[in-house]
Length: 328
Image (cartoon, rainbow, N blue to C red; front, top):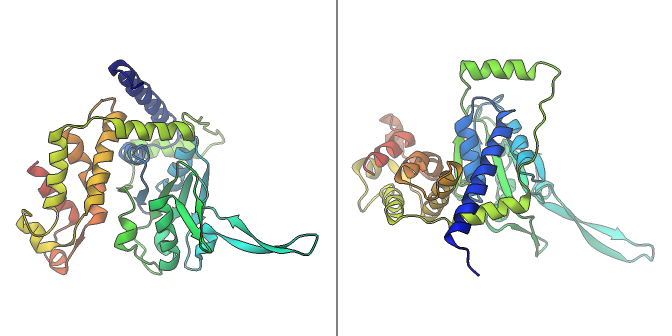
């Protein structure tokens, strides 16, 4: 029997209440990064993967650990280095011999077999190792020696990247970037928040946080996001925004002149899920056009690339997205 309107409304209210509790728990540890916390939660509620961009020391790792605890997810961390091999992430087969002398291969799972995988400084891993995550991020399974192995559910990758130091790094290819639902920039905290950080992290008191969700409940939340109604006006706005970001057609001059790589349909899908999750995060039962405008940059900016003329003219992806959202 299908849910009644009252049942659906109750599901939204219960979900919004638990999300608010999760934000409160995260706020006990993470100070001054409200936008980062909100956007990360939106991505996870949407069922996507996150790329965090920020200099060292901005609590990116702490954010990941805290999110995993609050959401009740098993987690692993991989420190990416140039000598990291695909097997170090996916796992490998070992040859074993039993008491009767019979030999057989046994698969030993790697750290990717978790619900919440942190890939720290992902751009320091070699392209071969980076590509090992592609199938996992898109299909929730990995192939080892021709055999497919399912990953736990839910499964999320939260990767970090240092935007400053580029020596010895391997830029993520477009196909890999497109797997991340959002690219979230982590900036320095304001003075008040940094004061809180100093007082909270330089004493012997340990802040304890508790799990608000379980993995199965997060899956239910992701299904609820997909069940959320979305108005035709919001859908039309998403289509207009993404399609105008592609050179040719109805694209504005600034796009035709400076953009070389534009967002594809996966960007539209990501934005559709993200605005629904944003509405749920805010306690609303349907997304608005304002949600599209607010989330346009983190969803689109890693799915676009500019040519050399843009650098010469001091044009950035951020300014182009701002121009595109002004007409919505």
